[in-house]
Length: 119
Image (cartoon, rainbow, N blue to C red):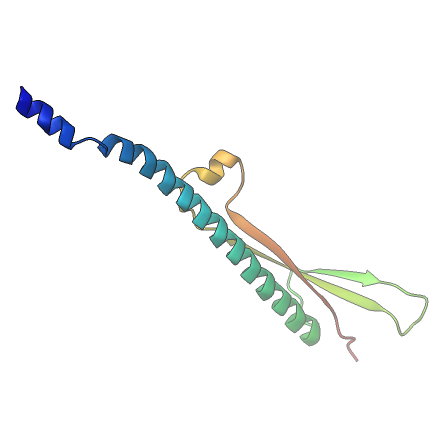
């Protein structure tokens, strides 16, 4: 009987350790997922802005792009703004977290640039 009690005493702390480590690991993964989503969004914003600038200079327009016409009484001040869209899925480190929050795991950013007049 004393042998069994001594075995149980050696296992003190295992349950408490698991009760602390599992929520701490989940919290860590949630933090990493937020950091990854923020960095992906910032990178996508830079890429979308670069694509908008490149397309505005070259005059290349895709079907998903928007062109906004800004009219002016001055015939030389006709301005066209090109808006590009970029959507990327965010990796899920904690399964079901985004579904639990009711969102979609993706970033949606826009880039804008003034189009050069075509001669």
